[in-house]
Image (cartoon, rainbow, N blue to C red):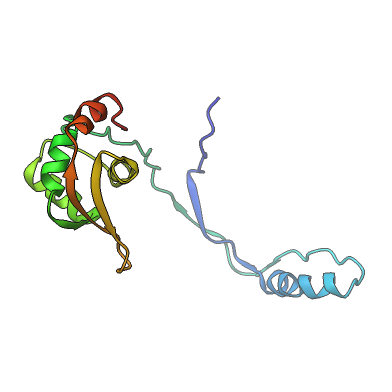
Length: 159
């Protein structure tokens, strides 16, 4: 079943009618409803004598298609690469992403994935990482990593 809009071939520029009574009726509809007055039907637009409707042919509607997402960057960021980038430096999420793009241009990681990785590092007993809460933007300083973290992180690496 196709649910596309079907547009007419012609576009109406001017229908040669006076819409003033309809506009005023719509403006006062809320007040009539609040005052519980009797129902009043909407007036019809008044055709103006001597004018003919002006119609202009419409352009053919373009069908929008999505461009396929190119996945040039397919390599994953390993724990040792992330540790090498973060160790001994005070970095925000944006700073970490920038460093990843600079040092590993073939790796594609989103901000959401990076936040999950850093959250795993913060909750791990094998990683010595400090979160600096004195600024509105969270900064992290990686101080130490137990070698067991590398073997465990390759098995449980969040995507």
